[in-house]
Length: 278
Image 1 (tube, rainbow, N blue to C red):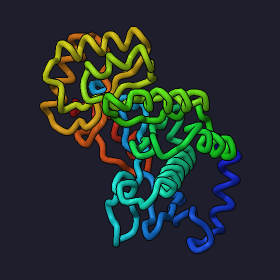
Image 2 (image 1 turned 45 degrees about the horizontal axis):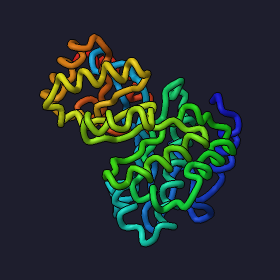
Image 3 (image 1 turned 120 degrees about the vertical axis):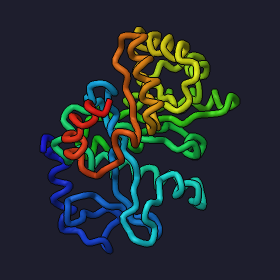
């Protein structure tokens, strides 16, 4: 493991029981966390170039591991959190779990880790977004430059809040991905925020010419475009046409290629199969 501080932390956790802490290790070495009555861990879904199957990054997703709440997602937990303080606590726990479970695996190599920020968190944190997580990464000796925080889609009247939060995260050393509902929305944010990544829904690409122009524009500005929720062969064919029109590699993410798994090794072994399917 190339992260000695994390290795020492995991060695200490290996002697901790569930009753003794909010974070512990299971028999497979995965870090688990507890929020109220839910025990959770991390799943990782790859972001891939759709034609080659090449791995670009992974997105960390919270996954339940107890029978009673199997399949419960981070979003549902946050939606049912009773207070802003509880939602902030859950968000920080999930980010820490994902960082531990990602970087403990040698297959992480040089890949980036994308982590979600729930829309409730935008207003729940009073100031200095990202500072607490930045301190956690520093304490574990983990590379903040390989973390990309995904900001949610916002309404037009929340633009000021998105600016404020994005500025705070940048000041704390994070790169940003922004979820958008359309190309027009993304273009409105491109110059103002200049994120590392835009994420668009792969099932909502009716104007292929506009999407192709946007991909070309972002490539020139050194901004990645990721097409999320890639779930059907028809959506894949649309993206392949956009790739052919632009001459650029297109990055997709979704269940057509991968479901979230705790093991990064499985995702790397699946690369050849994805390339054939594409």
